[in-house]
Image (cartoon, rainbow, N blue to C red; front, side, top):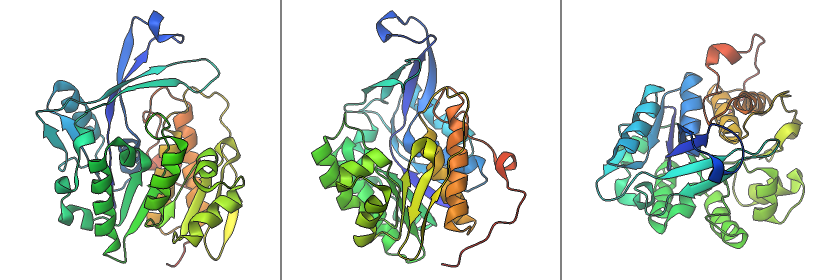
Length: 315
């Protein structure tokens, strides 16, 4: 197993036309979830990936499982719960701006995920563990499940834990996010915040300061996402800016950060150097911008396989 990721996925309803939801009458049903986005993107890039979560034992839960499984992701660790429903959310399309998102996830099946639901053997198979701050914010039991997954990975020196803070201010205040997510980040090998997230978590305003904050607390690689400007990466030995990939017609920004994470992990699995791994992340994220939906725009490996030789790193 190359990567295991853990977190909630929900059914997403997208209106047929842009504008206020109160005037929207027709919706398209889709899948949304940061961790499953990463899993799907990695599977399309040719990796062996598993997604761990809980879903309601309902038709919406089956829909989510079937979509993710159909993309080539292992869903054998997904638990169906008879007592709690599958979460849903709505996207309000506003032309020229990021969409407004409305979540209905209180008491969802995924929010009841706990350390007791973690199969130790399954997590120990993976080379990389991918996690986000969304799971931390869902409930105390979800936070414990995430910590258990990190503990299992850290007990094995050849495994890497990747953490995307993915701050949701509808779930955590800025003060709570700083306290909770920096605590998680110190136990993770790779941390990849967006610039605004990094400012919230560290109090630093520049990518270099944000990276230094996490490196000093134990991370080995920090990547700060800079949107259209690309990304900045830093380790104890090297650092650099990686230019973004221009996108002429941006349709939907949701899912771009998850595609970025998948591209970086894919490059690292291939033992590419950090610059090239982050470049792949920028490329996968850019693909997501041109399509309505969270994961639909992610490319397959044959679409992005570089023709030039990639320098590998020794770790």
